[in-house]
Length: 183
Image (cartoon, rainbow, N blue to C red):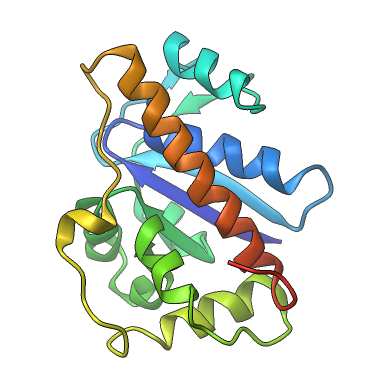
């Protein structure tokens, strides 16, 4: 089983949406499992109401969600760590420097995957192929790899954020499923 860990700041909006949308897009029986955490999160049961409504509108399930703080064991145990902004990826690497080759922002991972030749072997092969492209692809402006935090913003911005994450996660599924799919 492959674990994908999404990281944002509070584990209330972006990473929670990404975790649950990935699970929905992969469907039951997938060998890929998703989780999430926040660099400034604290344990709390239940998903934020606005996040849950948007998630369910997009076909995800908000049941039994609990936010949690980012911790070294979560990073060490994940096959792929995806920050929703560069600061989140960097926080994961600071906790577990040996995980560098498995830590990206969501957008960075997909940008690097766009030209990668992923051999058969599932998600682990995809992560290795994408990691090998680091430093070989033109750099982008830092903000291009970030998904903006909707915290404190109007509902339509939360919805736009969720739609952006859903599009990225849909592409992620194709990458993790391997050859024969289009990114």
